[in-house]
Image (tube, rainbow, N blue to C red; front, side, top):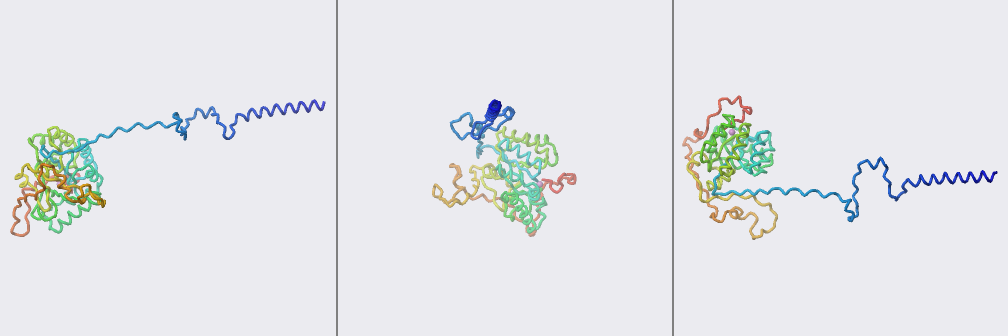
Amino acid sequence: MNRFFSLMLTLLLLLSCAGCVGQAAAVPAPGDEAVPHPVDAETPQQPELSTDPAAPEQRPEPEEPAEPEELYVRVIDPAGPMVALTFDDGPNGVTSGKILDILEENHALATFFEVGRNVVAYPEPVKRMAEMGCEVASHSNAHRDLSKLKKSALLKDLDTADQAFLDAGVDAPTLVRPPYGAVNSTVKSSTGRAVITWTVDTLDWQSRDAQTVIDYVQGLGDLDGEIILMHSIYESTAEAVKVLVPWLQEQGYQLVTVTELMAYYYGELPQPDHFYGYTYFTTHGRTDTPAALPTPEPEETGEVQPDGAAPEADAAAESLPESVPPEEPAAPVQEPAPPASGEPAPVKAEAPKLPETAAAVPNPAVFCP
Ligand code: NI
């Protein structure tokens, strides 16, 4: 009997061990291929990347090739009609961006005469203007009547504005538009800057109505060579610009910066200590000999240029169209003689009246012209 029980016990042990082996077979040994657990099989798995390049089904999906960006090359025809849109009194945290959006959508440029202390408050639009190729110019630091300042205070104001531009990451402007268009002989010719006003005043600051501005500009007739004054701090102006920019282009006008207009239409670059106001624009017409725009100074690489010229040599002359003779000295601007009394008197003809409702202006310190 004992032998029988021993045999049975051995048999039972063997059977139970066979069950153990059967269960153990379901557990993957290290190195064995894993059998996915039913629950795990439904769990999204991150696709594993195979190191075997011959396993195409495991390769990551190639990304869709990006649409090639449409390349826009801006070309100005010096002989074609052109207009310079100008915006004073900004930058503004809202409306400057709206105007820049419109310009960008239409591949148009403009000139912004910015107030230094506004640049301190809103440096970003100024950086964007420069990046877009718009001209960033100065409208003084605090929008004071520059003709009423002593020369030292005048220069300090303009220098303070320049620092605001530099702090915003753009160059110090060489072009200044005096607030209210108010000038005297010191402002005109003793600041080391080129001083410029405008030829068309939309009075947008007065009407604050987009349709009024649109109707006025569209009713002016020939606009070739004009410098149009607007202000970048009004919603109504931004609305007018949305209509006027494409409309001007449909009329065939190239929208250029003030310096481009001066070079291509009037034939000279704005010169320091020169004043470009009513007299200048009414006595100068379209030139036959466009001036070359200044080219940015190349970074000093120490490398010899392909043509053997020094990096900064004749950069401007090389960019002249072939039909244009080498740069000639700018024609002297007819300047009225300074008053004999010594203390210069403001030129009232250039200074439009101030709005009577200045206190109601949202940004009271910065209203225009
Ligand atoms: Ni102004």
